[in-house]
Image 1 (cartoon, rainbow, N blue to C red):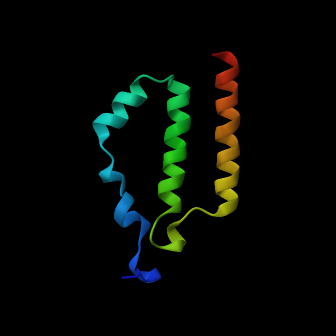
Image 2 (tube, helix red, strand yellow):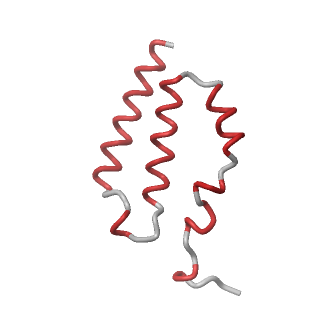
Length: 81
């Protein structure tokens, strides 16, 4: 049975509450604090971009700007680590 486009909602399957917090916290606790901040920022963008209502989603220009900011922060962290 083919899934109709309207029947599928990304957040139905990827709700942030579905993430096993223990695994996430365990893995993040092993990382450098700045790397952790970068990853959490990327997760936040992904969740915000997958909201059901397009009006609630991040604007693509803001996404691009934020991803560049995260990349630059990550590269600075990498050059000092």
